[in-house]
Length: 183
Image (tube, rainbow, N blue to C red):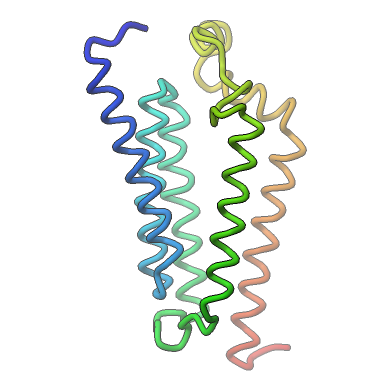
C-alpha cells in the first residue's frame, strides 16, 4: 500500500504510541482506582488508533468495543462494588525499594526483548507485506482474526477467559468479606 504522506503517517503512528505509553504509565501511578480506570480507557483508545494505522480496522474496533467498553464497565463495577473510591484509604504503603525493584525488572524485560529481537523489537515476528490483504480476500475481515484465534490459539483464548472469570469472582468474594456479610 502506497501512502501519500509517509512522514505524516509515521508522526501519527509514533504520536499514538507515545500517548499509549504515557497513559499506561499514568494508569499504574494513580492512587484513585476510578482515575486509573479512565487512564486505562485512554490507553485502549490509543492502541485502537495504532491498530487502525496498521490497517487492522477490525481489531481496532474490537479494542474499543470489548476492552474500552465492556471490560472497563466490569472494572468500574468491581471498583464500585468494593467501594474503592477513597484514595486516602488505599494509598500505597510501600517504600522506595519495591518501586526500584519494579523498575529494574522492567529494564531487564526490555533488555530481553531487545536481545531476542536482535536489536529490533519486532525481530523475526514481522508479518510479510501483503499477508493481511491476502488473508482478507480469502477469509474476510472476521475470518482473518477468527481462524487463528479459534484454531492455533484456542487454548490460550479459553484460559484467558477462565482467568478473567476467576478474577471477577475473587473480587466479589473479597468485597463481600470486607462488608462482613459472608465468610
